[in-house]
Image 1 (tube, one colour):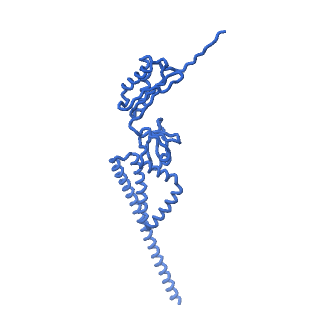
Image 2 (cartoon, helix red, strand yellow):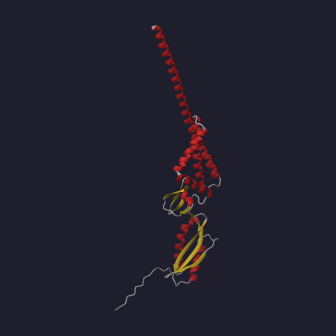
Image 3 (cartoon, one colour):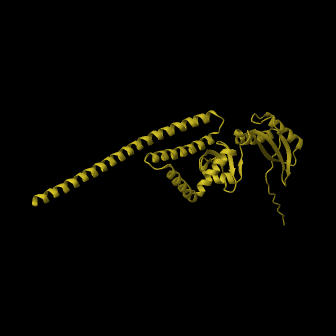
Length: 289
């Protein structure tokens, strides 16, 4: 009797041990398969990362050969990068057995959640797309943004913001939604700019002589665009001076240097021709008792 009981116990132990071996074997195989998949996914991720980098380079090079502006190229490059990484993550998730429908559903719900949480960022992205399509300004243009007291040279148009560089070398970051929904004055949109100079002369001056001196000055200046209109006129009759106006065109890249140079040359020409530039004077009369 004891021998039979011992045999039954031995059989039960053998069955449990066999079952344990099968379980541990399946667990080991599953862990091994999972580890292999993780290693493969890591390898595929780095391969995909390299492929994305290569694709971006090819896209940028092809765009640089076309007439597309540099700012638009940067924006397209950033957009392509985001799209390719989303596709890569989706493919790697599918390799783990996640169904495509589930990935789409997750991305949809995540997109809705992110859209509600980052409405401002999405509006900035939409503003960047609008700037890309309409091209109101480009990198290198000098713009004045109304309402926020910001102006400077466009240094870069990114996915969510536009970067301006001021004349004193400061960087201003302006959201694209602001740039696309407010009045932006593109000062350097055209190749030439109209420059206006107002200078006062004495009431004792000969107006015709003053006009001729200013006309000769404009004709002799190398920075003046001579095939454009040049005007010399009386701008205003002030209390202490006759304000003479000059309007002419210069290259946009020489605007400030032209302004500084013409003011200096006006003073020299007036001195040579005896034309007085008046200044405010105060006459004090004292009565003697």
